[in-house]
Length: 200
Image (tube, rainbow, N blue to C red; front, side):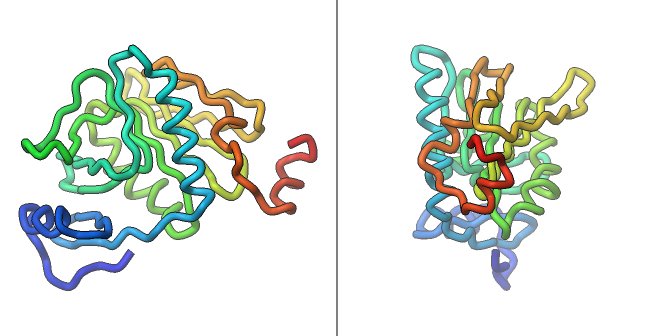
C-alpha cells in the first residue's frame, strides 16, 4: 500500500474515496491504496459469501463482501474487510449507508503483502470494536484457517483448521464452514498440496 503525501481529514478522505475507482484505507490523515486481489483470493471470498449467505436465509444477519467500508471508531481507521457480517440492524456513520460501524464477524483472506498487517496492527484496530466477536484469517496458498473468538473476559481464543474435511464453527452467528467449501475450485501449487497431505 502506498501512502499519500498530503494529510487529509476524514471528511476529505470520504469525499475523495466516494469518487475514486480504486479503494483506499484511511488512518491518521493518510490514505493507502489497496492492491487488487488474486484469483484465489476472489474465489475464497466468493465461496464465503455464498456459504454464509445460504445459512443466513430468513435469519436476521447480513453479509457484505469487500466493497463495504468499515470504520473503527476507537482508532479512526477506515478499511475494507474481505467479508463482514452483522447481527441484526447495521449501524452506519452517515445517511449514505456505506460506512459500517458494528461488525459482528470479520474475515480477511491473507496475501503475502498483507499477512503481517492483518495479523498485527489491523487486528489491534479490530479488537477495539465492541460488537466484534469473531475474526477469521484464511490463507490463499494453503488449507489453513485461523479462527479467533472473543471470550467473556475480553481475551481472544485461537483455533486452527488445516484439512479440507475440517469444519469451522462460528458460534456467534451459528454458522459452519467446511474447508472443502471455503476452498472450492481454489487450485494450490503441487508442492503445497503435498505438504497439506496427499489425501487432499
